[in-house]
Amino acid sequence: MALVIGTAPQEGLVPARPRAPKRGEGARWHRLMLGGGFIVLFLLAWELSSRVGWIDPRFSSSPTRVVSMLLRMLVDPVFWMHVQATATGFAVGWGISVVSALLLGVSMGWYRLLRDALEPFFSALYAIPRSALMPLLLLWFGFGLTYKAILVGLLAFFPLLLNTISGIRSADATLIRMARSFGADDRQLLWTVAIPGAVPFILTGLRQSAALGLVGVIVGELFSSSSGLGYLISNAAQTFQTDRVFAVIMVLAVVGLMLNESLLRLEARLVLWQPRR
Amino acid sequence: MPEAATAGSTFRQGLAVRGLTKIYDSHRGGETVALDRITVDAGDGEFIAIVGPSGCGKSTLLHCVAGLIPHEGGSLLLDGAAVSGPGRERAVVFQDPSLLPWRTVHGNILYGMDIQRRPAPDVAHARVESLIDLVGLRGFEAHYPFELSGGMRQRVNLARALATQPRILLMDEPFGALDAQTRELMQTELLAIWERDRKTVIFVTHDIEEAVYLADRVYVLSARPGRVQDVVQIDLPRPRTPEIKREAAFTAIELGIWRMLQGQQQKEVR
Ligand SMILES: Nc1ncnc2c1ncn2[C@@H]1O[C@H](COP(=O)(O)OP(=O)(O)OP(=O)(O)O)[C@@H](O)[C@H]1O
Ligand SMILES: [Mg+2]
Image (cartoon, rainbow over all chains, first blue to last red):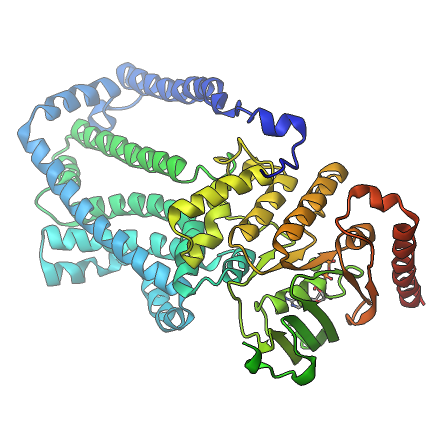
């Protein structure tokens, strides 16, 4: 049978069990204590200033008032209806923009001709502050899901498109050459070299686009809508219910964090092949 | 088939590089003549080594032969027919390991076979398994390239090329990154594979001793532009073992080639 070669003895026999994965524990506590500590400190200061009367709780509320408002809202079915309106607007808009940005980004990154044809158009569209289009969108689609979804899409589309294009374009020339040496055709180069290499870029794009999409849906609802969390905020603010405003903002903060965290988890899972930073 | 012969009487089975010239356009507008009328013959089953100073065009020559880059003059014939691109009968061991970072050792060795969609998956996997033993990476099958040492990556690179069972192996300083002992083991193993399968090998190296140890014939290239300065036939008996490196006949050839390269360097300095 084949001679075993190239084995410095310690290599072949003991497949070194990586000791790295434990890295989490210490660093995690450190982060939790320090980061959490600051948040607690901030909340305490806020609560104290409003109790002592340095700030007026009617304007700036206080953590305890926000929490008690939040608890009341969470059992109110009307609140959940608004959550659902926002979630639907976001999901539809983000979903569509993710699919189209991926398809377009991969094609534009890979096919020079397509890139040359479409780049000026998208650059121009990208340069427009997308919120400037809101009146037009309202005119065309009226209040409601379509308007929201399109606004979300317009905001979420670009970060993913641009990241995907640069991910595909940064395909490693030496890997392309290696693949070609085995006779890979254009399609195989795309699927086995360019797309896997673009995954980290795509994931970054996904996170950015989710964050912007969230901005899009809330801004859309603030501006004009009759439902959704954005509407709740503007409505509460107009009627001086600052506790309510802060409670909704808190919900949004949690949702944003969760979205980002779950995309980070996905990333950790998909790019096992990258050295950990 | 023989009737495809275009090289007339000089035709034979194998690879023939005839007066190959390669010119790179520089982005500054100038031109670099990387290869100047190179002629190399590699008959079926021959082991050819190419030595030359850094930057003389060894990698360029190999890439031309692999069909990866076009050439500007001369011809490149495989069994008498012009080579127009990469082909299954050739495989390259690149100077840079060129491993896919998202594939494990196993996946990388499998890659060439994946692309060529042959052999059947179970045969391919079995082949990967035996190659992992061959290159001494048992236990590292599931490791990603970033978890490997430079020498281990290079061994994956070699295994990947062997996996497609090419008739012609094009190797670009494959053992350059290895320590002396591993390098010697790899050389001996390569010779064993070659004795067994009689592949045609074109082996680029900096290392004169390595060239003399492995090859039937050594082409000595001159510095830019790369020209064939000398061709040295190595008539040492086979099969060869590392002990041969200490023999007088061996060191004499080695010294001869060393002098050729030395002479060049002096010319360059002047
Ligand atoms: N893609 C390229 N574009 C322009 N010039 C190139 C390119 N690749 C190589 N060259 C030039 O061609 C010459 C030969 O390069 P090559 O990589 O073939 O040398 P080499 O003999 O393999 O060197 P080494 O031993 O250092 O690997 C060099 O002068 C180099 O600058
Ligand atoms: Mg080289």
